[in-house]
Amino acid sequence: MTTKRIVGVAFSAICAAVIITACAGTKLVAQWRDDAYLGRAAKVFVIALLLDTRVRGPQTLVEDEFVKQFKARGTEAAASYTVFPEGPRPTKDEVLAKVKELGADSILVVRFLKKDMEETRTPNLRYAVPSGFESSWNSYGYMSTSSEVGIRDVSYDYDFLTAEVTLYQTATGNPIWSAMSQTKYQQGPLKQIKPFTTEVMKGLSHAKVIQ
Image 1 (tube, rainbow, N blue to C red):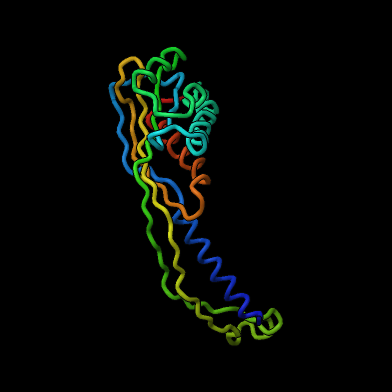
Image 2 (tube, rainbow, N blue to C red; image 1 turned 30 degrees about the vertical axis):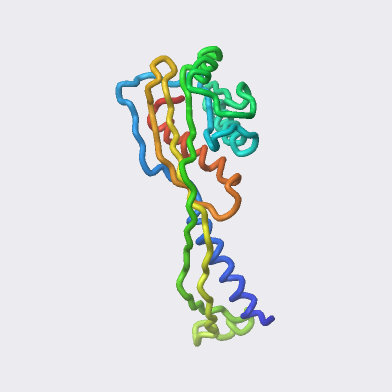
């Protein structure tokens, strides 16, 4: 493979990587806050609802990441999987009873609503690949020593995950803050847990319902 060919292939790979990175990530596309709520959550009970039955895995990772980030901000938190075993989803009354027993004043519910798949394509690109150092140095300022290479379309599929995150006040059962999020990713969804959680925490902090 020639040097120009290697550079062309490398540039094509870089283009694909940049586009994939740009498309990945979480955005809060809609937010709501109860303006009558003037407090800050002191202890949050985190529960992730992924399936009708509770199983270890993604749910555990999501709840653990939220607990970690709450504590990093000075807010106490507890993950639901530590008190509810695997099996059928607990009832609302069971959750409320356990939350009050733990002394949590707020409940954060993470619901994953749907998952879609989409395709993204980039147009054909042509790029002037520089020549070697010696020839470019000798001709600098006099003539072009580059050659064009074609870069074919870059096409890839990515997943599109929609979630709803709501913070409730334990005493009243009323929502304090809620947001709809959309997460795009190409590689495994587990890699998106931390950035997803971080974006949600930013929203909670901006709404001034947590520390």
